[in-house]
Length: 258
Image (cartoon, rainbow, N blue to C red; front, side, top):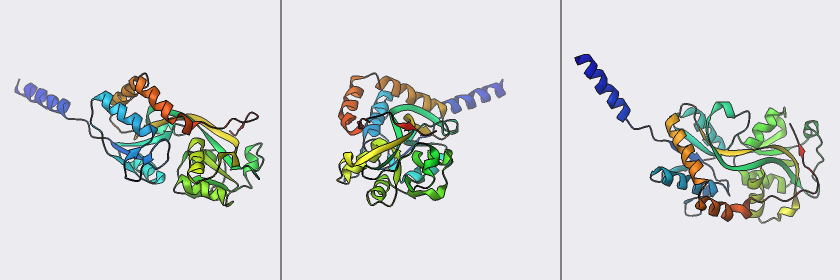
């Protein structure tokens, strides 16, 4: 009887232990996530996460902003790490836990309108210089499609990717097109000066969790997201970011490189 009581006491103690706190990582990549000049966390994904915390009855938690490649590395190494906004591709899907969707986006190849190269297949990419962000979905999708690393000029930030294209150091750039075009505007250039040459993939942007993260916490966040997405506040949030997320219409169907 004494052993049974001891086992029950130990079990109740384990049940009472709180789940480990999650560590939230993100990057400076508007309009989804970033920091303003005062260091305040801003962006559609950040505001959505705040609504999720409120739905769960939890206080606002710190968000650590890092270069994407650093955040990606920490996601793979820390059991309690969360990284957002992360594109959920076929290749990434089995390696993480996910809470989706934050938004939907397309990963595109974009060039200068005046001299954008013609791309009809993946073979046409071989002689080109393509700007990418380190460990970003654009770089990973190009690698998955067999493009040699030497063809890519990888930098830490999306604004650097776009600057490379503006200064003609690259022929094309690859990445989330909403973010690419946001940087074009931020750098003072008209979006009409740039064209989408091809699409690499369309997918959801999500919260990605280390595979060892507490699955109960992940499930609670998914439930909170599902509820928030049905709310009037979420519709207001979408409306505020709609203009920043609108992509130009193409005259003809865009090529998809698989």
